[in-house]
Image (cartoon, rainbow, N blue to C red):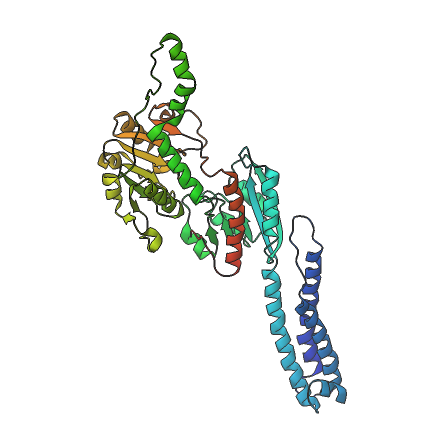
Length: 451
């Protein structure tokens, strides 16, 4: 006859414990499977807690069954001399083990993140794809929570929504996404519900639905790896405008000697472009983030006065000596304007006809941020009227351009093809920082968040 006097009968015990055993066995099995993954995956160790949990639950089943059946040994194992109290103790132990199992399941999930990396062609003459892939492999394997990762070689192709979506799969995180509204939208997260972390591999990003990403609990970060590099390039563009060393060098190395063949009195120290001194001139910086701050430091090194405007007032000792002013003052007071802000609805065509009209005559424009921040037609007009003396641009509105835009035909511009970020050291640093930022996110302290 079945014993109905015990507080916790065998059938009830079985209903509670069997699912727990199954859960633990599955957890261990999954863990072991992860241990033998070798293709593009970091190592995942099976926690000893899972094994201990399983053993403990099995022992509880055995001894509780014995106790409920009248076994003194079973009751003593559970710390009681009678069946009723023993079964109550068993119930409490099962509940505790259940909580441990739930925590362990969450931990197993947290230590099995799937990451997909989108890596384009390095595009430089001193860094190979194999080198940058090796850096990804090295860095990703330093994050214990990553159970599996894939590196997608984009080549020279600029990915669009369909390209990203076809490769993301069940990934929890995607690194190397070009952040703009054509990619970061509801459709992406409906197709990939696991995706909760996205990182650019650069400083810049385009306009996207920030509120939607917050509502979906997605964290989006940029990778501030090239602040010094890009600031240095901005100053290089400015130096080229101020001195045009190439023209002077070409004359000294070849032009002078050709002229001397026909004119023995040819001038050796011939000057072909005006030389501009920056000392005591005013540098106006639009966007006082990491790049803008380094540009300010470099400008101050030349003895320039620095004024700046940013979306939010910056505080801290690192901003000492930088006067933070309105955008109107940037336009009105600057001898040089250097752009270092992201492209948003507010900054699109920020430098337009109205803005140029407010500027000093002979102002110099530098842009290493996003081409669309400048109204290119208005800039060309300002250059031709000599309102703007020269423009040094590493970016244009549409990249790559489909035709030779008028600015490229102007004698008053220096234009390069968005290469400020490309030194080898900076490219490898981008990989390291992208992974470190993801680790910070996993540790509950996300950095460089842009949403």
